[in-house]
Length: 299
Image (cartoon, rainbow, N blue to C red; front, side, top):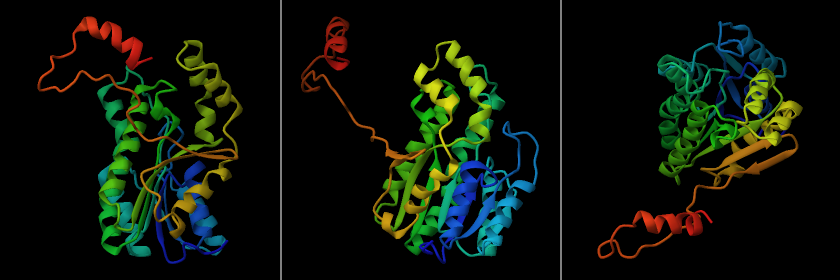
């Protein structure tokens, strides 16, 4: 390793297992001091334990790195604030945030209000609270990296509309942060990871049911059964985005899966029909839309 992050302070959520753990280890290997945040729940967000965060922190220390555990729930603003405080007290101001914490929660249209808000808080609000607590300070110091986990689910390809809304919201949130802080030395990007972890394996039976009901394609289901690949293939792009080499890379979504790293397209207008100057032209009629929407706008 090259110590490209020596002197930097990183906070990684969900770092007790899976992608979060792999990212925490990789950042530490490049010299960053890492706060390892993990509430220690089961795959289904049940229970709490200090063992997951402690194990990752100890692994970093045993390799000669610097790490402190955080057992806070980042599904609350108070928990996020406490995790940031642990980083500041142990190592100094946070330079790098990698928000990976997640769990398997009910996300279909039968979810209760309580389940809905729990889902949104964990997957989307977490990233807002992390950004609010760290990004302004990064900008004041002139250097910072903010990376938030999203998912293929943001595109709606696996159903689960609450998950889709939360993950899509993460993408838009990060793009907004990137634009607000462009030129301030702070970058904000998304990671859409694909890795064989405890979460990816537990969810296979649910995807099988969705496949039987025709909610997901054969291709998506077969890929889920096969598994995305080793988790060690995810951290390199995360680590690179945290280096000075990526100083001008912001507002993007990177997918790391197996031996492939890809970048998603930006939101853009792809086709239009034009009525004319709105000040002098009447609105479209339904009869005109009968013709032009299928034939031109969606053609």
